Length: 367
Figure 1 (cartoon, rainbow, N blue to C red):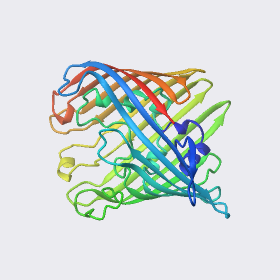
Figure 2 (cartoon, rainbow, N blue to C red; figure 1 turned 45 degrees about the vertical axis):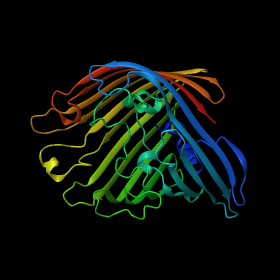
Figure 3 (cartoon, rainbow, N blue to C red; figure 1 turned 90 degrees about the vertical axis):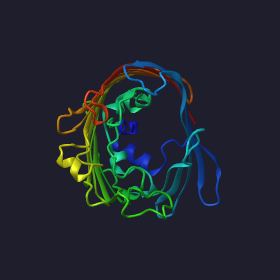
Figure 4 (cartoon, rainbow, N blue to C red; figure 1 turned 30 degrees about the vertical axis):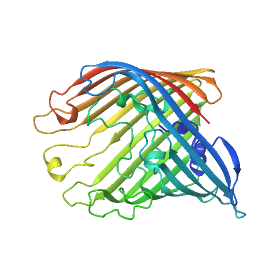
């Protein structure tokens, strides 16, 4: 969820040019100023569903623990430069690093990013969940509690490049308009990746392009974006990858509205699956929110459809989400989610349906 998009186009590039959550300096390195931030989330949840298989219905989770380190400096020619490292520090994390990238930027040049981080399709995405409170319901931990099945699409719109190693460029803001473009040689390559093959079925030569526009009109703030990425599969019998995303938000006073849509076309499918009528699916999300001095509340709706072809009906996932949050103290947020979820023909299996209700309470500590 990229809630910085609600601020302005300038705020977006500011976030890209520095680091998202750098809370305070912890010292000065030999060449750069170093700062540290992080987040820990603890949740309690309960729910009921028709088919719960192995999903625990009542329990606790430390669902996120991350530590972010930023080092930055400025050159005499006006350029800023630095690196960002986001570390996974939860007790069951199997990888050390989440994102690692370097940034070079200036007001006139724009922003260049090098490394393992989401590209324009991720950074510029706008959808209904961006105006929702707390963990934004279906954009949070709902899918880890309610069993949507393997055809649940989630809310991302960069299924091809993800956080693979890439080069990205973002233009300066031009009257509210900003553009971004990235190139990812291999979606399976991140970090050193010296052993990555070019024939193992991942996507290659991926181009991601995006545009976002923000403006203020009669006291209301509007933002809209279009994202698109495409790449070829390394195996000739697999389909090429494509993903289109569009979205918009509007904020007026204490109220906000958001909408988003994504289409994954034939991404991830074999040519034979496509010829049988299958597709990779589409999703859309809607959200409305209200912000007060000490709390936020919202209502959201999510709907995804995956085409199965033949005699199997579409796999459909739906969720209605009611969310709220409040700040208990500096760096400490309490949030809650109530969701009503439904899944039809899960995993492209006819008649494999599920429905249920869940409640999630979050404590979120950020520093």
